[in-house]
Length: 340
Ligand code: 5GP
Ligand code: MN
Image (tube, rainbow, N blue to C red; front, side, top):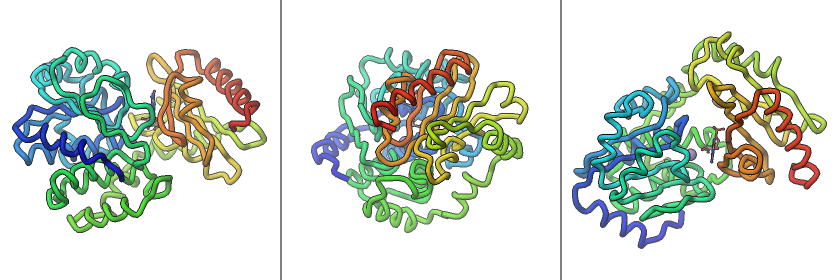
């Protein structure tokens, strides 16, 4: 990965003296958000800095085993402590997010600290303004791999112990679909070799993430695919919707529906997939696509969101029926423009 030498120098200079560091990541944190935040925190802590990781809301139960994940502050549960820590911070790192708006209710607390140096370390498109140092690399398959690249260039690979390697590996596999998506470069596999040398246990990490769900999740998945997957444009575009009532029926826990949106793309002719999951006050929209079909633009245009070309998300404040109608009209418009 081509990281500016001068940015690495600035990173080293910033951390040449002890700092109070807050690391934040996006709402509905995933494996990459958690893994890259924790690995940054671990390295900086080892180098004598005070570090605290804060996420806006809870992360899925199958990520709780990640080393030090339980020490993260969840703003929705611990706002006072989080605010106090943020107020004292002299460096704020935003990891795996392109914009403060991705922090939702946590964004105000971050905005209120006007003196801290702000770093952005991210692989989403369209990085936001107002950062003192920006590592924005959409060509990186995960933020964890970007964090690996920064840390190894700044401090050398010997800084990466088993704990850090495990945290980074979680981010790498969750964002690449266990090495199945795009941007799989030789450098990535060289990085993984270093993580293996540091002693990571690949089968255990895999099992901890992908074979650790509840029975309700398995049954909800069957229901979602069998009963709720609908198709458009001659079976080339799909969508799945899940209401709060349906989620409750299968003892839904946060994180249970992650990954469902990928499944329609296992059908050979499918080009794009969407999932609408009802939350308390809005509908969460998840989008996936194959090849050149750009769901980042689709999410920005129709659902106030964004992400990557083949994986993006957004929100709808309409009812479920209206959201589905809006999606169908959007797909037709996109199709008429030759974009799907
Ligand atoms: P997911 O469907 O897994 O929630 O998200 C897929 C990708 O889209 C992730 O990279 C995520 O950060 C991004 N994303 C999800 N929801 C939103 C959103 O509301 N706004 C923006 N800008 N990006 C989102
Ligand atoms: Mn990511």
